[in-house]
Image (cartoon, rainbow, N blue to C red; front, side, top):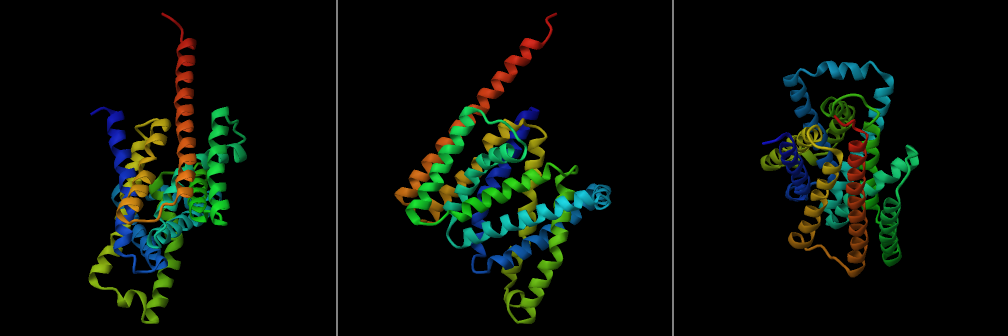
Length: 302
């Protein structure tokens, strides 16, 4: 298996697992989103602690702790990831998976806007058209239902900003995610302790529920490690194309397994978003080919 094929297998595995997350969260949907989120933080921190111990990466953690600017970025990324996790869990358990999938479809388009606004990157004409189509899709939801699709926009914005902030952090994903979960750990433990004192939450969970909640740790870490491995073996455009696997699985699960309502207005919105993503992918591949041709032209002939 070539390096590229290995990377593709890792990326597909990561996105498939992320796409199948609702199957896991639905098993514990009777537990509140905050309780599930708290357990996800706690058990992810435990798994990351063990992983850092095995990989002997504590030096990376110590390096971050000694740099105030890095800590500042990590505090910001912590707020963004806990918002993303919390809204995602709530959307799944409140039967809003279709809107969650919309959020992750919108995410690449939001990233383009981030580059334009924050990094002053110039957008090509097809990119502008893709953003326009996505905006029209969101406006249709606003006009039809009289409300902003806040779940989709929150998921897209929080995940996009999380990735942007991580570009400022010069350290691997495992040490940084450990610090993020460590920052949240006291809050999660305090929240569950208060519930236990009130004779709710943890004291009422069965052994089966405890086991399912404990799995939240590896369920969080495994796709992250697969994704990290994939990004080291694949170019950005390939990873960008494969990332549509996760929201597509979410969409299909919501439609055919959980029978979520899918009105004509939602279909129209998705058609606009899918059209935008098609343009975005076409533009990305076109730009890649142009750069490859330009590179060949400047190479000296022998």
